[in-house]
Image 1: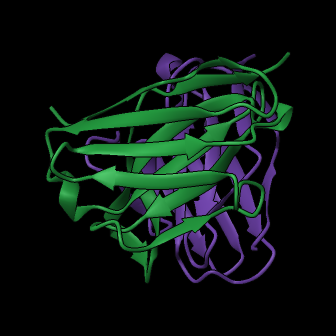
Image 2: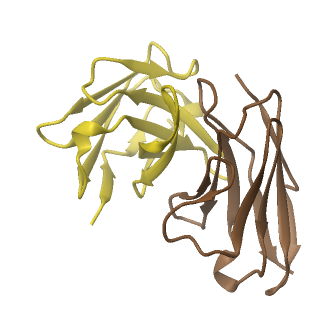
Length: 107
Length: 124
């Protein structure tokens, strides 16, 4: 299985900040990476797939970049509704695997 | 409205069984691969099982292989997960999710529609 390391595990930020979350793979996965947002008590929601393609309806302040082993999720101007936990997921090889998650909390 | 609604969770003793259901609506259920993903309390997401669109092919995580069985009834737009020989470590919220037809590499995909989840607690 492909392992992923997400960092940081906890990120304290303020509304309006630019935040960056990293996801590093144990092996190259081309661009077969997705990002999800999960709010407490809710199901995850797909934000980005193919490393940088925004899912329909996702605000443009979210962006993704990277290929191979290193990927980044950026929120350009943090809004109150963005405080949540974010997960990366690879779908390059079976089984699909998720990162450990990054909780974005209010500073 | 595109929707997945899980049911069937609850409290069960170790060694017991439970059957989860996931009712789909608002999309062509029979065209999609479907998955179960679980999340232990305070922990991250873990993929559990998948089934192809016509139900002829299934796969499982090593941790549940031989104990869990995924199935589907396309006439009823419903996905199932039969869980036997349950262990304390199976305690989690179980989500059903559809495999994205766009975000896919071969037979592995991202998950674009998620249910609200159903809680399974294995405890004596």
